[in-house]
Amino acid sequence: MSANTELAVVPPQETALAVYSTEKGLEPWLQKIRTEIDGFTPDISTRKGRDAIASMAYKVARTKTALDDVGKKLVADLKEVPKKIDAERKRVRDTLDSWQEEVRRPLNEWQAAEDARVDKHNDAIERIRVLAVDLDGITAEDLADRMTNLEAVAMGADWEEFEPEAARAKDKALGVLRAALAARQKYEAEQLELARLRKEKEDRDKKDHEERIAREAAERATREAEEKAQRERDAEAQRARDEKAAAEKRESDLKLQAAESERLAEQARREKIEAEQKAERDRLAAVEREKQAIEQARLDEIARQQAAADEILRQERLREQDKEHRRSINLAALQAFVKGGMTEECAKQAITLIASRQIPAISIQY
Image (tube, rainbow, N blue to C red):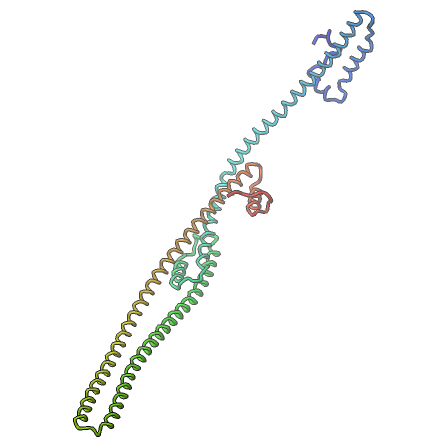
């Protein structure tokens, strides 16, 4: 700016920051202006004096603007400094983050492989344990199959450091299955024996009932014949005084009655034989129905066992999928925490606390 319009020259650029950042650093410039103002004595009564006053006020305003502009420019320049610093900080962070990820990648890959290896062994041990749980209602045949499958699980170097735990789980499961198999075999034998005894009793009761009916029929026929014969004998005694022709007639009638009695007795015998034959047919039919029921029950049990096995496999697949899903999400969260500046140990601890719902209002969405 021209010296004609300002009362004091503004501080030079090289010292402006020091002047403006010092408390009362512009005081010398203000004092210079004050001196100019104090030494100004215009004559207000003349036009020239009044013009001089206006010019002096204008110079003060121009000086104010000039000094303020220098400070404003300093502030503007200083505001650019944090932006440049932040840009350089971001560049360094991004570069070091990528270098950190590059350096740590082999460890992360090793850790993922190690986690998969440990999960594989743990899952195999869990499958061993599952064979010995929820055994209520399982048949002896199914229990024997489980024992066979479990005994076929070989222990060895493939189990690595998990071999002792797997061996303990196998021994414990085999112990449970052996005890369950013995109890189930005893139970099934008892049920078969009870069924056999019930069948024998039913057969005896039915035979006794049929024999009783046949015996009562024969006794009734014999009794009726005897009663009838007795009545005839009584009648014969009363007719003893009758003529010989009447006696011969009665004798003939008695022969006829005897023949009828014999016929009735023979009929009763045949009815008894038919009743016995019918009882035998009914028994054989009942035996056949029992065989069919047993066969159907066996087929139903096979179908139920197959369905149960399919359900176990389905549940295992679901658990595997859920574990893999949770593992991938936890790994992504771990990597995000580490990328954000956490150590891996702190990141793991944070994920564990969040997953176990020990951090209020924060959760992992699986």
